[in-house]
Amino acid sequence: MVTLLVALAAWGFTGRSGAAWSAGYGGLAVVIPAVLFARGLMSQFSSLNAATAGFGFFVWEAIKIAVSVGMLFAAPQLVTDLDWLAMLIGLIVTLKVYWVALLMRPKSKRSFSGN
Image (cartoon, rainbow, N blue to C red; front, top):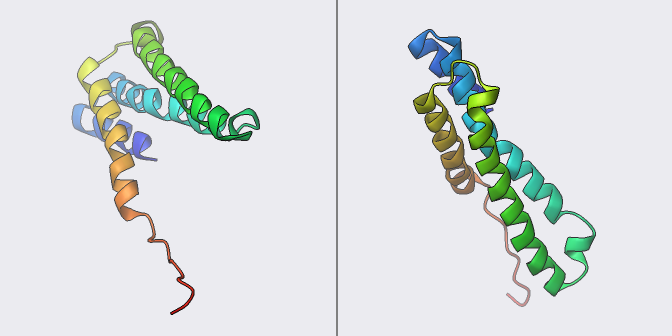
C-alpha cells in the first residue's frame, strides 16, 4: 500500500510517469524479497526443529538480500526513464514502514496465572 502511495506522490510532485514507476519499483525491491523471506520461513523445512529454523532464517535472509540487490541492478533495464532519486525514495520509505508497523502493532495481552 505504501509503495503505491509513494509512486502516486512521485507522479504528483514531478508530473512524470517515469518518477512514479521508479518509486514503485524501489518499493517493490523491498516488498517482493520480504514476501519471499516470509514464505520461506513458513515452509515445512524451516520448522522441523530449532537448528533447521535458525539455518533457514539465515538462508532466506541471504536470498532476500540477493533478490533486492538483483532487482536494483536490473532496474535500468526494466524501468524506462529511470529516476534514481525517486527509486531510492520509494525504497527508503517502504523500508521505514516496517518500523511504523512495529510501533503500531497491537500489544499482546499476557495472562499470568496465580494472581
